[in-house]
Image 1 (cartoon, rainbow, N blue to C red):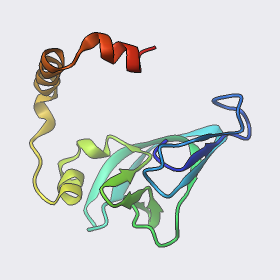
Image 2 (cartoon, one colour):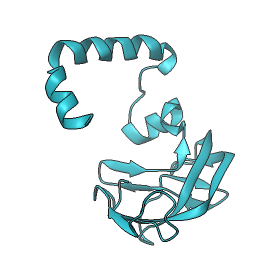
Image 3 (cartoon, rainbow, N blue to C red):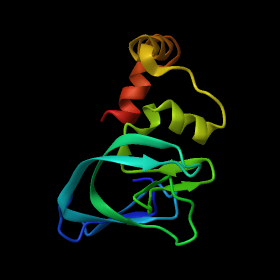
Length: 139
């Protein structure tokens, strides 16, 4: 979704053969018939290890010189490109080690995630025109 396009030759997700992505990353993804789901241990570019859950139905082609998001058993995974990254490693951005490597500083502990979501919901309710949001994004 973050890349240039998503090819769907087997029509796994849609009737079209391909759809445009958001164009934030210089990658193309081709959907496969089989879903990959597995727990993995990965390493950040700085060599710090973390656990994550790899899940995807696509194979993403990235430039050979692209900086990977992580390494899994020496294999590059994902991409870091400017201020954007893409990865199939779910839960990675909840890990303080990964966030510190990505952001360059220690992020707040996500242990109180429920309270943070409540604060975000309060902010959204206060500042967002609900009718406009629904018209633009939920229809």
